[in-house]
Length: 134
Image 1 (cartoon, one colour):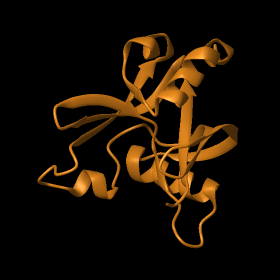
Image 2: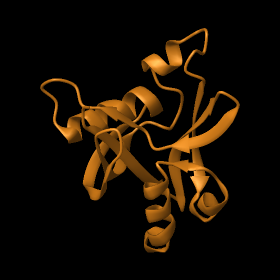
Image 3: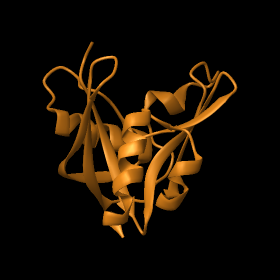
């Protein structure tokens, strides 16, 4: 199993998430993906933010590491350029929607307790510390 890097982007008391609808389940994930050969975790996170959210980001610091289907690293990041929109990654090119739908969006931090954020550990962590982002 390969390592994964994900971005935690917080702006105006909201967090950038990707709304997923798959097999009649609706949930939210942090933008990110697997590290490709020759890439650092930070480079993978930056690439995935561009592919999934259509934004260029800067990594600020590592927030949390969890172990789920490999090691997943979640980085606090900031947007350098662009506005969140549908990206150009493979998930958006699947015309048949075999992997479900993907919709990037800003979710107010105070709404995190009422939605299904995955992985749950990271959602809980952000819920616990979100007041420090105000």
